[in-house]
Amino acid sequence: MDWPLPKYKLLAVPHLLIFFIFLPSLCFAGEIDADLFGLTYHLHRKGAVYNAPLKLDKAGVKVFNPGLGLGYDFRKNRHTDGFSVIVHGGLFENCDNHPYAFIGAGGRYRRYFNKTTFVEANLLGALTYGNDSDDKHYKLNPTPYANIGIGHDYGKFSVTYYISYIPKGSDGGITSSTDMLFFSTEVSF
Image 1 (cartoon, rainbow, N blue to C red):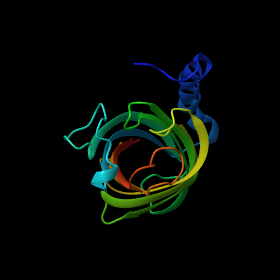
Image 2 (cartoon, rainbow, N blue to C red):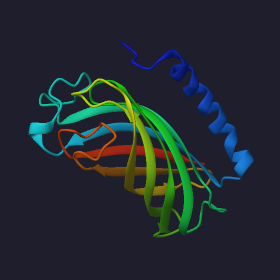
Image 3 (cartoon, rainbow, N blue to C red):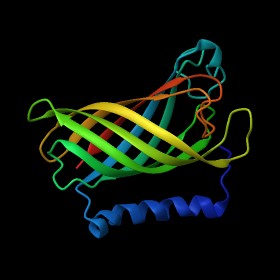
Image 4 (spheres, rainbow, N blue to C red):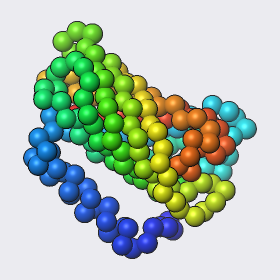
């Protein structure tokens, strides 16, 4: 695979990940989030990526977008309801199999239905680094990001399943042709 990032940026990613792993002890984060990115669903068949290398159907409406992310929730007790400040970052493959990175900060609202099941919503302001399928040049873009998820608390960790809506042309170079739904999973401890 042709890696379009310059070598210094390629080396910066592991160093940033190591920094974020040790960051909770410096800033007393209440919850560490590990994100697993995965599936994109294009809402308009005409805007689907027909030639996507990791498409799951003939038309390219469903595309596998593997990736990982890290995040921190600064609430004092992760088993509580309410608002908290969060930071998140990640890297995944876009529909054209090019790397797409983001880092952002914002807020999270969590509401427990009972002792183990909860719903939460995240709203972040993010900086993205990616390219559009029509323009192979990478660029840095500010982008709003929001998602909603349902989760289950297993005591020592929790698992949340998220769905994100990304409107067409929302900047960041990822949605030039169609609105999308993006599905991901998060393990928090």
